[in-house]
Image 1 (spheres, rainbow, N blue to C red):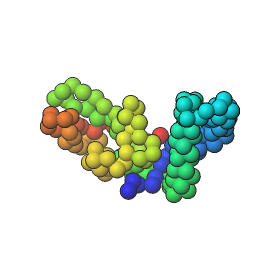
Image 2 (cartoon, rainbow, N blue to C red):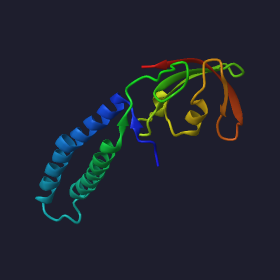
Image 3 (cartoon, rainbow, N blue to C red):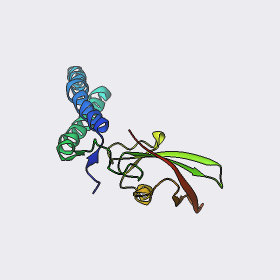
Image 4 (tube, helix red, strand yellow):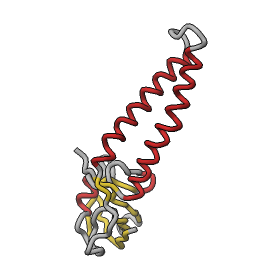
Length: 159
């Protein structure tokens, strides 16, 4: 089970997604399905079949968000000790042996975005970073069948 915590911007993004799905996407899809159904034979009507499938996907996501949002705890304060890595920290790291730099942000499971370096607080990498300070060295997986690399924590920031 994933940890039910989230940042304030992440929570607002999920609320906005729910609102958009309910007020815009679902209405447009229902209208498109109605128009496709009016064309006649539904068994070979691709627009009708696709529309119904899309409507089920929208309804599934709406149900998920309606159940998930009330259970999430918004964490919108910085920890007392900002010199340590905790939830919502942006951690700048350096691997001197490979000449690599990387910044990771520890967020809730509902906010992960690998392209931005946002990883789940539940991930193995995040668990290794929790409680560490600048100057600490952490050994992290380098990739599939490539062993591990030593990363030094350079800076910790909280937004």
